[in-house]
Length: 259
Length: 259
Image 1: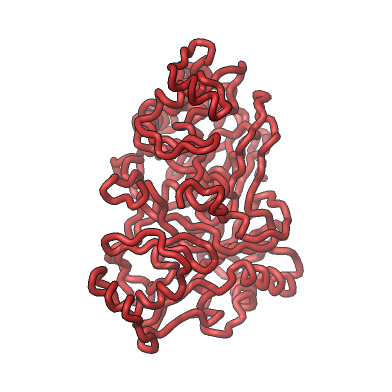
Image 2: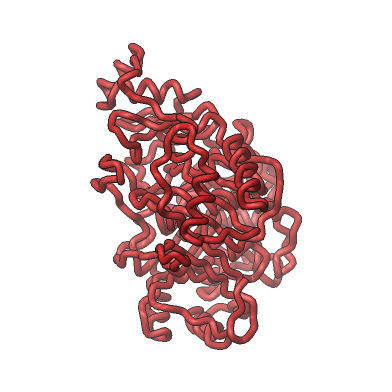
């Protein structure tokens, strides 16, 4: 909250990008690197802050980077590569990361990952990885990664800091990608208004907001794609602590009209 | 930008909620009400700020509120109402606002609106409207509404303030709603990274970010659904001025794998 001159409270949320982290390597202690970077730059985290981290650095720290030279594509991947005009080894990695192909058309593959996420190329990505010919895959269990980071951040900063791990997904019907939460720990990723009355007395019946996805999107505003800002701090949002992770954001097949 | 103690620049975006607007009535000058509220509360807008407005107050100002008592449902709406357990007059309004029904299952109707937006109930909504038995529909042309607001805000504040008009939509595959941009004026709603190199030298080939949707989501963090904060100011994002509106965010049927 910030007070205006007249004393009226203005609700305010701030998103701060943390630049200057080193290139992340397998086995790195990401929480310690964040802590050290904050200490070195005088960037003071506060109780109430939420730490939002692009999955790319989590994948790097967890060693979820594959060298395409080590991948032997299956006959299906080789066949696909001819039709899609993509590297068969890349397609092989995408297939291994998928439990279902949702759409395959032109050069686009929309996959359901082993986590139940639905996104292009099963989250396999070639950007922001040094060395060439290497690809990142999503963390094996992003909620567990987030949970571990919350524990480690607490030990370093001495207070509770929820964590969101993000990726950038396309959507049906709309152009452009947006950042979404693929891993969550330390707070409730949904805000359930059902049963609450709006200021006019109408009882909201269906309104549940995917607040963690909105926070992931907000963080992208300071992260960008080419600026080396893999971590953002969201300050000022009165989150609710909870134990469920990002799985609460995945719609079950029975409830989904768009399978 | 905010400087940390060591002098290193921290990229920062702030979202400020503007509370205290009166209940909006048909014909109200929304820009003037925003200006007056800012003046009265000492909330100083700055060049570079973006004004994000929930469509509900735009619909109210434009008179896009219907009294269900004046609606005569068609036989199809009456028939639907028996199966969906909804008010036939509400269904009639939803049908009139739609140009296509995308899915109809259980009590859910996903519609393509006359604007080309795909959302539940064609954007027809009963919440936050005083008087009972009344519903709001989306503004007839949200980009034109946003464009008018940009012009009016410029005359009042004496500088350029881009406008985003938002609504809260569900998505396939994921639980929870997020705020999206249904009207845009005064800046480019997409950031196109195609052809740019990431810090590792990889050329991004497909990355276009729906920045206006991310900003709409960020604004929801301070707006909420029951707090009477229909306007948020986003500060600190280096937007690019452009003339295209929110139509740039709508995927054409030919490019959409999920029609």
